[in-house]
Length: 537
Image (cartoon, rainbow, N blue to C red; front, side, top):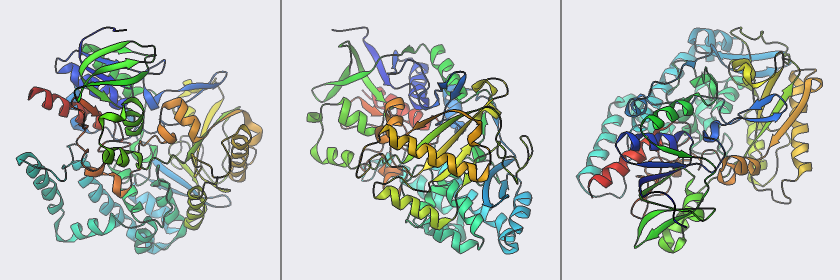
C-alpha cells in the first residue's frame, strides 16, 4: 500500500536529534515528514505516569549542552536554563557530605576539610579540564575528519582539527594527549589525595560506560561530560549543565515549534518497519501497517544497530560493514528507579531544599570509593547485578512541581551497574524487585525514614529502557563514548560523516558524532550533510 508523498526527506524518530534534522531540512525548503513510533514526540525527554498523579522522565533530568551554532542554525531561541549553585553532593561518611559548587572558592573550602593540598590544586585542575573540554566543544560543532578520506575537503577538515590542537600550546597539548587515553583513577591519583574528592569526580563522569575507573580511556568520559559545562561546575549531569526551567521536554518542545513553522509534517504512532532501497539508493520507508512513503532522503535518529540491522535489509550492505555494526558496543548498564514519595526525604548533614548545599539542586551521589566503583563495574562485566551499585539520586519534583501532587515528590535513582544481559538468568519481575529493594536499602542508609515515605516505585531495567524508549540494549547513548567509538570512529570507521553506504540514507542520532549529551548536534550536522549531498545532485 502506498501512502502520501512523495516527500523530499523522511526523518525517523522525534527525539531532540530527529527534530533538529527535520527542522533544518524544513527550513531549507525540503518537504519533510517526521515519523515517531511512540504516541508522543520528545524521544528520551518524554515523561510518563508511573503512579496516580506522579510522573517521571528519568532520562531527561539534565539539559545537556546545546551548542550555540546548532541553535542559530535552527533559528531557535533556547528555553530558559537553570544552573544550580551546588553542582554535586557526595556522601563521604555518616552525616558527612562533600558538596562541590560552581564557585571555585566555595568548592575549595569544602575540599579543604579533606585535604588542604587538594583544595589548593582544585582551581588549576578545574581550569585544565575546562580548557581540554573546550577543544572537544570546538570539534563537536563540525563534522569529524573522514579517515581514510580523499579530496580537499577532508584535508581542510584535518588541518582544522590540527589547528585546534596546536592552539593549546606546548604545555597543554601534551597534557591533553596524555589525558585522553588514561583511566580516570590514574588521572585523579596524579592530582589529588582525598578519596571522597576522587570518588565524586569519577562517579560524576562515568556516564553510560560499562567500565570501572581503572579502565583505560575513562578519563575521556570526564572531558566529554564537561563539554559546554558552566565554568567551575565540575560535575556530571544536571549539576554541570543545569536543567530546563519549564520541564524535561522544554528543548524538544521548542524545536518542535521550529519544525512546525518550517512546514515539517509530524506523525506519531508511525513505526518504520523497513527502509526501502532500489538500485543501491533509498526510496522511502514502509510502516508497520504496510503503508509505504516515498522520499529520496531518509535520515534515522534511531541507533545504528536498530537502523542498519533492523530496518534495512542486510543484502544491501557489505559484510565487513555489517560486522562492524554488529560489533558496536552499546551495553546499557543503568537501571532507573522512580519513587513516588509522600514528602521530601531528609538527608542528615545536608541543608534544606533551596540552600547552596542542598541535595535537591544537583545530583546526590552514593558511591563509597573508587574501589567500590570498580567492583560494581566488574559485576556488570560478568553479567551480574552489583550488590552495591553506584547510585545517583535526583528530586525532579523540586525543580518541576507539576511532576507530583502538591506536597508530594518524585525521586529518581540511577543505579550503575546493572547489565542488559544477565549471565545466568533473565530480567524477571523478582530480579527487578530485588534491585529496587537493594537501592531502597542504600538510600535508607543515608536518609533514615526514606522507605516509610514510599507510596509507589517503578524499576526500569535496561530491557525496559529498550522497550519504552527504543534504545537497543537499553543504551541511551546509542553506543558507548569509548575511545574506539568517538570522532571519526563513530559509529564505525569509514561511516562517520552521517552518510551510509546506501545513497540517500543518513544516520542522525546520538550514535553519530559528536555523541550522547550534545543536544541536537548529530541531527543538525547530519541534515547539513544530506542537504550538501542533495545539492550536488
